[in-house]
Length: 455
Image (cartoon, rainbow, N blue to C red):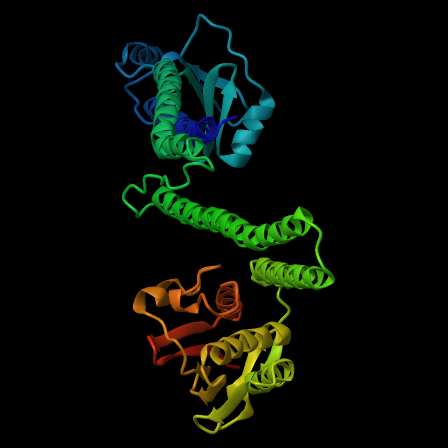
């Protein structure tokens, strides 16, 4: 069952229930009012008859019957019976009908003094009338033809009204459900046209206020992220292929050169050294690509625990200077932390150390004196690590692209590297909920500042 039909059905059931309850309530109230009104008329008729019979001396039974038969308020199939204290019938408004009554009924009237019941299809009331020490029992019955006719008309009217109301409700429910869900149908049609080849398309966001508009906004945000992910993937594959092609082509050229003609031992050694250099380059590039791919994993897979940023920084310095003794790294504090928690962050020790290694390695590599200067400072919310060099520097345009995978500044092409380190660093800092900012001038050096929220 479609959502439109389900909404229409639920709406119809709710309205139908309200209509049925309302109709039944009206009918029950009307039937109760009719019954009570008719019983009151029977009681008034009985009391009037007994008063004429007992209290008005000028009226005898014959005259009273004439009055009962010719009164304008006579009821259909009306009967009035009056009994004395010995249950003897002393008056009957009808002579041509057999009147059946139960002695038990008279006894009940004497006990209750006022009863309301039925005699077949007629309503019947019993009254106890006391006068001059005499207890007279009055039984008055009649058929409420007019009242029952009105109830029948009311029943017919409510039935047809209920049928028409349900028909209109179902029709309007289907119509309004379709109108309400039309924006969703339109969104569904738009979504079906979006494929991996046209992720740049977006859904109509309407008024940007109701629930459907917010759904469209969220879907567009999802499409935007998917487009970025696909674009990064395509760029990654393209750039990776380009980077791998160069050392592979060099390997092939060296091998072809060695096969052209017989070589001396010295020439063989030279070719093998070139092959080893190209192989090392391939291994380094492969390791960098593997590390870059790992940083693209979700943050939920990142184990996090409290880490002292200065400890990770010193560990990165020791590891880097052990591998490259020519590097000089100076670390200083911009301000003395008031508590040790100001340098304590939540993160992964190995990944955070890799961040500092990449930044320190770049600073030393691009500085003529292979020296990096590091300053640690803290504030109320963040711990800041600024890594500075006096190297080649960057132009404003290069700064905007420096964190793209495989991107290298023009002045950096003469230095070893693949253009992956900074993109990995930026991704790792993002995983730690931090920021990485750059200040640089060509020929004056660069300063990379890492800001991490501390505990």
